[in-house]
Length: 348
Image (cartoon, rainbow, N blue to C red; front, side):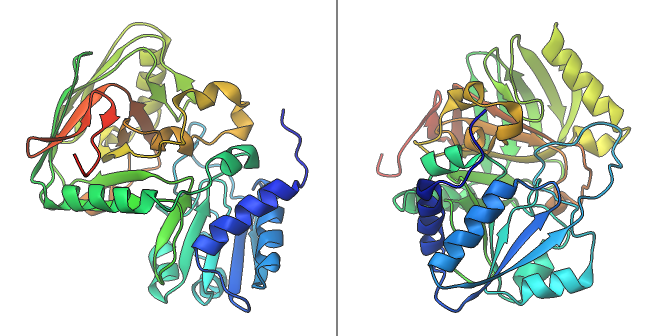
């Protein structure tokens, strides 16, 4: 266990990220948390805002009762606000919202209303500050992520192949693509820290083929490196078969089935990581309660495949998997952007 105490170096890391977000003296800053939020990060956020001369205030909500049939982890779809209008009004009227909810507002229903009046939202991932300090954003990453977003938006087809047997085709026409480099400095925008990832939400009926999760790939919902391969067969966005022997395949089959919801089998988003600071092996170094897994979503060259909600395909569900897959070759309209797990830099 890493000691949960205030460290000057962690305040400094939070200050640097908030500077990138262009927090200014006198700016109103809402610190959004819930009763189960990591209090250390809430305190560090407040101290960093005060050091910059901002005017922070807290919106603290009770963590909602559990309603799902299985534990819900690492979805980016916090239900903490629960449509509470005074809370939404306070957040949307702020210059910046520091999101410290357990799951984050990335896919929360209230997010459009908060962004709609010009508030910018920084989701501080529920990681121990030891990891956040190590993954402080690099300004050089912005241009690379923007180039990847531009390439995705221009493409009609993404293909993903690997020596393990992956052979996946994604129709990119009509997909909604977003990139995150770790901070937000414009009104009405959202980012998460750590950053360094590009993701596309395909329209309905866009994903077909086979995705093979090899031993050593990652299931972030379970915070687990796979020990044996699992092969997912996809037809028109939906996982129609989960093949594999051993614990990893059994866990996936049971968890997906537990929802009793066809949409839990559907594709949420696809993309790849671009952050050279993010480490594949990091999950082995932290207790599970200290690790949310955003770093593994962003490590350079992983193919990030997710199942669950995709509002752009009119699909909604709480069931969610994020699965960073190594050693894949990703191509957009035949142009390779990740070569066997190594990003191809824009200049190349």
